[in-house]
Length: 182
View 1 (tube, rainbow, N blue to C red):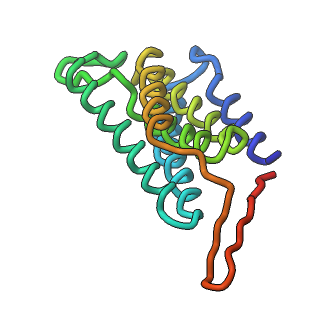
View 2: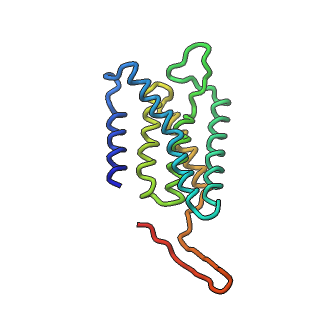
View 3: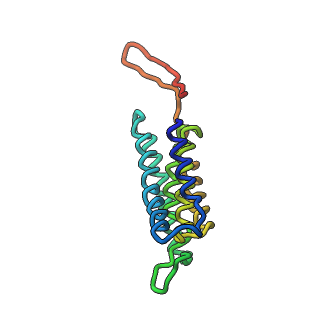
């Protein structure tokens, strides 16, 4: 866990660098951070769900991600909000942030399914994703907050906490166990 905390602190420090001291290449790097994390966090969450017996966690994750992304896409197409870096001829797709929605879907899934302690690092990285989108001038703060809220709402509606009770029958015996995570 110490390694994960160090990674998050380094990322947060790097992202909170004053915007006035960032050059054009630094802004592109910030954008790349968000581009990578929007996929990395959900992939990690899905990987955790694949480690469970059965497919219930994986199905719930896919439903949550699909509902979140569909909601974001519909809102983008209906609101036509301009991005901070909008230029004539570009698509007006600022509200809400799809990158942030995707990242928070993974983090909130981990929180809801496995508990808050497991989600601390993913939440830190999801916040970093949102900050990277604002600092790269791709979104306004309202876009990032809305993207995060949409994903968290869908996740809390569609995902159940993983049960720690294990029931196993093999014909002769029935085993009931309680799993504890430390």
